[in-house]
Image (cartoon, rainbow, N blue to C red; front, side, top):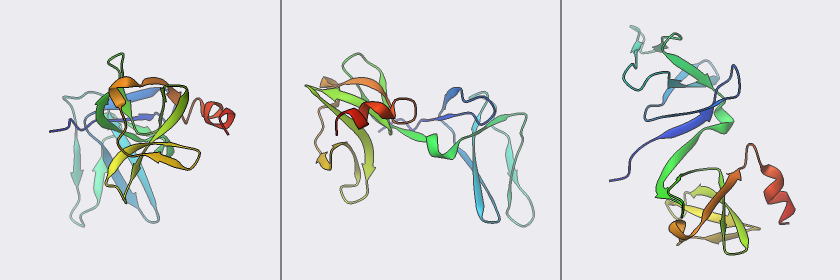
Length: 139
């Protein structure tokens, strides 16, 4: 079974954090996402209307657009691969994405999809949030 983990940038300082727990809080038309400050401390509760309340002292609010899930694979150097990572396989760079149609994580490059991706033979070079220029350079 694949280990469930997430990573995202904190809203307050942009630092990357990782966690096995993700909490989403829906308020009106917006959804905020939180990762716990400590893996052993995850306080959140629902009020009488079913609204989730998150204890700000226990969680970091994260930037939703940077949220990525661990894909259950590691690169050639043993690094965990997350959705949004840019990996190199051979001479080409690929962005790791989840594609609903295939119901799996894939490597994507210039409109082509590598559905059976050799993750163990690839190397993480960056991610689309900090290194978007890498993928622009391949176009």
